[in-house]
Structures are given as C-alpha cells and as structure tokens.
Amino acid sequence: MAETWADLDVPLSAPVREALRELGFEHATPVQLATIPLFMSNKDVVAEAVTGSGKTLAFVIPLLEILLRREEKLSKMQIGAIIVTPTRELAVQIEEVLQHFTRHTPQFSQILLIGGNNPLGDIKKLQENGANIVIATPGRLEDLFTRRKDGLDLAGCARSLEILVLDEADRLLEMGFEASINTILGYLPKQRRTGLFSATQTQEVEELVRAGLRNPVHISVREKGQTADCTRRTPALLDNYYMVCKAEDKFNQLVAFLKARQNEKHLVFFSTCACVEYFGKALEEFLQGTTVLLLHGKMKRKRNRTFATFRKMTSGVLVCTDVMARGVDIPEVHWVLQFDPPSCAKAFVHRCGRTARIGHRGCALLFLMPMEDAYVQFLANNQKCPLQEMEVQAEVPDVLPRLRTVALGDRAMLDKSLRAFVSFIQAYNKHECNLLFRIKDLDFGGLARGFALLRLPWMPELRDRPVPDFEPEIMDLNTIQYKDKHRECQRQDQLSEQARKEEESRDNGGEVEKKRDLARIRRRNSQNAVPWSKQKRRRERRKKRIAKRTAEDMLGLDGDADLDELIRDTRLLKRLKRGKISREEFEEQIEGDVQSSKNSQ
Ligand SMILES: Nc1ncnc2c1ncn2[C@@H]1O[C@H](COP(=O)(O)OP(=O)(O)OP(=O)(O)O)[C@@H](O)[C@H]1O
Image (cartoon, rainbow, N blue to C red; front, side):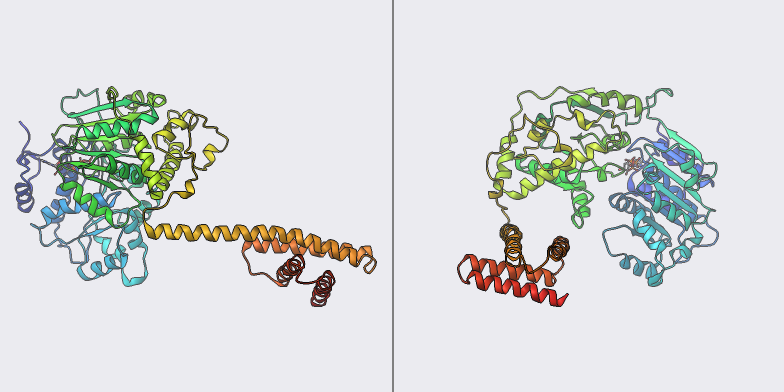
C-alpha cells in the first residue's frame, strides 16, 4: 500500500497538510518519504530520483516545515530559504508549486528572481516587500548579490538563511554555472542546510564540498520493480525507442511520425536554436491543423508565454532545445522525440523524463544516423537507459522538395536553413561523446539534402571538403526575395550600396593604375629635373603614403592630404581621358600638386 503523509517519520504542519489536501496528493512518493525527514532534521541531503518522481515537493515541504519551526520569526527583509534552478521556466514552475503552500502560510513572502526583466524591478520589489523565500536562476541572483549601488544589501538579508536548495544540482555545479554558483555561495552563511536534487545527481565529492555540504546524506531512490543491482535512470513506465535512418530521411520520418499522431502532445528536441527556428517553421508548413510552438534559450519575450501555452494544450507540438530538457513538468506529453542526440548523455535522461511522469505512461524516440548507432550501447552502459529499436516508417512522403520550394519563395526560410545547417555542424563538433559523433564521419551531402538546402553555406568545416553528391540550386539565389516587404527593401538597399562600393573599388583599383600612369608621366617629364637619388626618395615617400593610405582605407579612417591628392589626381586623369583638359594642362596641374605637396611636407 502506498505510504500516506502520516507515515512520514515527522509530522507535517497544518498549513502543509492543507495544501497537500487541496492538491489531492494523498500519498507521498518514495523520494519524498526518504528526503523530507532527513532534510528536516538538520541533515544536508544529496537526493537522486528519476524524472517525474516528485523531487520538487521533496524540498518544498521540508523547507516550509523548517521555516515554520523557527523560534524567532522571520522579519520581512530576512531571507530564510533560497532555491536555485538552471532555467527561468523551472523557476517559474517551482514558484507556482510553492504558492500552493505559501497561500496557507501568509507570514512568508516569496519572490522570483530570473532573467528576462529589468533587475531594478526586482530590487524595488525586494526593498518594498522583502522576501523570506527566494526562487532564482543563478545569473540574476549573482547580479543582485554583487550589486552594491541601488541600495540593496541582499547579502545582509541572507544572513538569516536556513536552507539552500540547488535544483538540477549537477547542472548547476557544471561549467557554465560554476562562476555564478561560487559567487552566490560566497555570500551565504555556512551554518545552513543544503539540499542537492536531480535525476542525474553529481557524486563528485569536491562538487558537494564546493556547494557547502558537510557530511551529506545521499538518497538514491530506485524505480519500483527494479532489483537493487539493476539501476535504471529512466521512469519504469517510459517506453524508450531509437530509429536509425539516413540524414536525408530524418525530417521525412519526423513529419510522417507526427502526422500519424496529430491528436497527441509531443516535444521535439533539436540541438540548436537555429534548428528549432528552421525545422519548427518547416513543421508548421507540413502539420496543417496542428499547433506547432517553438521555444529556445535565445527567445526573449515569447519564452514564458509559449511555455505556459504549451502546458495547457491537450495536443500539439513544442519544438525546442535543451532549455526544456530538465525539470519542466508538462502534463500529458505523449512522445518526446529527439531529432538530434543531446550534447551530453545526462541530457538524454532529462529529455526523456519530460514524459512518463508520476505514474503516467509515456514514450520517447531518438533519431540516429547510421554512423551514430553505437550511441545506443553507450546509453545502455553509461546512463542505464535501455532502448528498443523502432523500424523506419515505410513509404513516407518526401517533403523535402516542398521545403526547398518554401525557401525559394521566401529568403527568410533560405537564411534559416543555412543558419540551421551551420549551427548543427558546429554543435556536432562540440558533442561530449566526440568519439561517437565525429564530424569526419558525417554525410554532408545527405545532411544538406535533409536540411533541404539550396546551396552549401560558407563555413570552415566545408572549406577543403568536397560534397560531390549535393546538387545546389542552379539559379542566382540573390533573386530570392524576402516575403517581408520591409526586409526586402532593406536587402535591396544593401545590394545597391554593395554594387556602388564595388564600382568605386574598381575605380579605386583603376585609380592606383592611373596613379602609376601619373608617376610614369611625371618621371618621364621630370627625368632630368630630379636626380635619380631624389626620384628614389620620392618613390619611397609615395610607397609609404600609399601603404599608409591603404591602411587608412582598410581602417575606414577619413582620408588625409595624400588621399585628397589621390582623389584629385584621379579626377584629373579622368578629365584627361575624356579630353576635358590637354596633356599639358594635366601635367601642369599634376606637377603643381607635386609641388604643393612638397611645400606642405
Ligand atoms: N505526492 C504526490 N502525489 C501525486 N503527484 C505528485 C506528488 N508529488 C509530486 N507530484 C506531481 O508529480 C509531477 C512531477 O513532480 P516533479 O516535477 O517534482 O518531479 P521531479 O522529480 O522534480 O522531475 P524532474 O526530475 O523532471 O525535475 C508533478 O506534476 C507533481 O505535481
């Protein structure tokens, strides 16, 4: 019989029990049963349990119980607890879960400190309302701790801190967040309880020590039905598949797969933001009648709204990057599709874990190219993630010609396809398992066809690499216009400016040629007037001037007397060539210039 909250070794307070009743959570999950008593009894905990197993309440409940049990009540400006999590979406989600509880504990105020809005707004809120419980992303929290001006002393507020929670701790302790986390930890009192939570927990002792844990209790909750020796890192109710298909077939397979399941809800992971932008737009084209949403880390305003919208949908597709891989709790995701393998094996576990949560069934499918199939064994060994093979779908329609037509009709799609391809190759190069995912093994022609490219992009990885089996469009791609009239006008202006500059540089090239003519004319005319040594010095001076001028031209600096001289000489030569002035007049004026430039030196 599943354990009820009353079976916990420690009694829960009335407000917490009331909140659980409202949520309809009659039973505690295993990780909650294991963690809550320990965290409440002054222990530092390192908790690991599969995705979707209730880790959020495993720290929210003890956090509140500890604050409720304080002898000295927290004043408005005293921070009693801080929860740090890697992404805004996760912080928003945790704040919402916490609100279910703090509406029953009005004595505690909470605040969300995340990027994407003006930090001065956060400072104002903190100064006016204070905060007893902070939910934050690392960058913004670090910023607010380190700010001295603006009259905020967050470190002072945190002197009363009792609990620090690092959610998705292994991610927070990885490179990329290390500096922010170290800075934040430097501002916190050592006397506190610290809890680390993740489905792929760090076991590195030095990382635990760095996070300030003193003899922590390790909690590792295995999936039901798994014998002790056979650990499994994904939920028991997750059916996990992989499909091996050629680079040029992957998108066709994805479209056919989604078309066959349009009344369900799916997440589709890509490796880069540019791929999300491109293939997300492409899926909109082919999945008529299905809502396709895009979400990635480079989005500014729409990110929160898109996340909130998708959570409420009962069917549709969210095309995303790994910003959605960890922690986000989206009800009823039927399939998690990984169009590209993640950059690291742990991300694989988290991506799959967006489905099959808290006792629901779910399915995941990883697309692999033939030369990537060793990844299946790697996942089984390294991440304890056994995968079943799914055959490629037979006779799927080839949508790539239509995708190329979309790019032929809108330059924005052409740009997206090239950016997506370049970003994919660059991301591929940085894969953690670079022994399994090697650039040199990539079928560039098949990939280019699979991206429905009209031409190959200019990029270093292709510089000395022929791609004979890719047929570029045999048209001038410059004739492809943006559908967006404003953008097309801008492009036309840039093209005209570019043409003018090319004309000018051709003239300038002619200028240098003309200049040489001038020098020859001068030398001939003044052959006996200037001794050879002087001629040589003049040549040296002229070389230096042209070299200096070229540098300034390259630097785009305004011209100086020499440049003016070159321009004047050019004009004179043009007038000579057009017969506007005689050779004598020309040479007089040129000589005059030489004379005047000599005077000015
Ligand atoms: N005791 C419970 N009874 C029923 N449902 C619960 C219980 N605890 C949590 N849940 C629900 O289970 C879902 C998953 O919870 P949560 O997001 O905390 O999982 P998690 O372990 O943090 O997952 P991840 O590793 O992906 O972050 C949520 O929808 C949550 O509301």
